[in-house]
Image 1 (cartoon, one colour):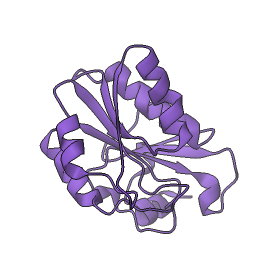
Image 2 (tube, one colour):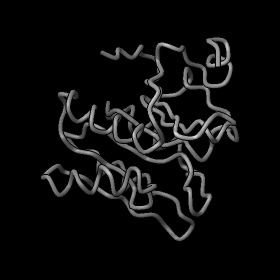
Image 3 (cartoon, helix red, strand yellow):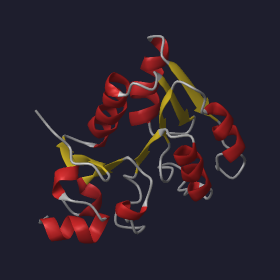
Image 4 (tube, one colour):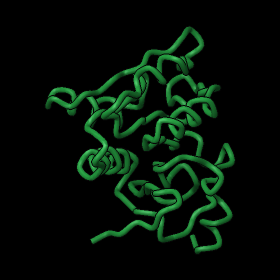
Length: 175
């Protein structure tokens, strides 16, 4: 995809994109990089219904290694409780990682805007695994407080085993 395609599809620049081998690597790269380089803390807030690429690897492994990881539950409709998430974001929280839509139930988190407003108000970085919604729901990252977005290329007619994470609003430097 050329530069104009990235701007049109996602509202971002090519310099904001890192290509990885797949969605799992994309999620891992974001979470581990934030914990390594974010000076605010070593705490992650995520949901208990995340895709295994986030939930099992790396979040459960991080918890085993002593990181503070909070796994938020969902209600009977599969939605997160905004008040529970706000309470979970405490000093030392470096990242909130919540999928855009659940890969098993199809639930699109209905309180998404409230969740994002809370994250912005508390000045915490936000990552979303958007693999399931790519090409189905419009994404205007320029107009969104999302810091990191994980995609998988095969969901929008590209080859398998290619993914990317987008560092919205900030060029990504890869050494």
